Image (cartoon, rainbow, N blue to C red; front, top):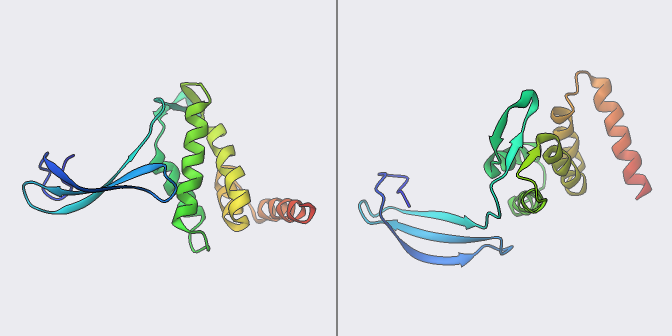
Length: 154
């Protein structure tokens, strides 16, 4: 593992333990060159997945990109980082176990929407506003009313 401080390629594992939800191994490492300590996470990757974007573009599935977009939607909300991590892990697991090497970005967006709907209604509306490309206030009002109606019927 390359040291993030001096870029030396040799580090020693000082401590390993599972994360709270047992989806990753957290490792504390120490650089053999500069002595700096840093943390890495090791996760299971079942298969390489390619995301099919609009305009026939393709890119590898990126967990960090998914985490960032969900964290942005949840910003200043009472959503714990562990909840975001569990949501991201669940989406990643669904994408990797679906059996397809290529997944449309729309499918990932729908999985995020489904997860955020259950997690936080404001984050759900925020994500939907970008994902569904709301262009005016009326779009927000219509979507928010469907969210309220769904909450009343549950």
